[in-house]
Length: 338
Image: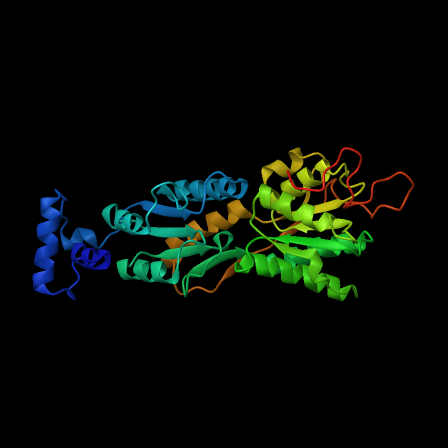
């Protein structure tokens, strides 16, 4: 029997055949489930579920902080599930929502499919999707940031500094947030009259290792970029590693811009210029949407991004004798990614 059918029985719904209802009740009794009367079942508990694609990243820390604070203010408990953790199964997570009578779910993972959201609808669990997780949640409420504007502002900042060879390091190309940041970058270059060069665009994962690999590839071009816009702070950290391996200084030889403005940005050397995405505020807004609208029937809500200029960007370097050109290994450097 399906999870939605069990949910209907627990909630006293009438659209379940009597034979099926008896089978469900018998199974629940055999498992020792404390059955509740339909009147009590009509009221959901005080638990909010957060399904997130990883809990060890910088952006996830901000999301957890914002969601927990908002849930606490509302007198709710927050249950966090790692969608990429060992042993995770969507079916078990859905069953858990039924068992603890979840008030609603905030979904922050690209692993949730349209079929998964349809199953949530069958359980009548309100849903709000947070865009950092990517994916598509159908008609559910969505909380995001102005990713296109953020990408535009990052590239425009580099253009205004005088850069003309500006590389882009994005996340998976099938994620809306990655495409939007790239399109904003492309719009800024077009507005400045700079021809788009496909060689300067690379997509990977929003992780340091991917940022390092893609930065090495870009810096190995015959005409390498003088600036890189990495569409996440984690990717930008990887760019720093690639620059250091090649004997390049940031921003003397290479300017770098990230995206997110996580707490690590001010602790990098030099501090990272980045686009601030209000992750904690977005998570708090998602929790409030569950309380306010039961998670459905709302248009996408976008919170504004802001460019935060720090020490990782400067005008492009002038050619000078004895300086290793970007993309060429300085003495002791390496042509390959570590």
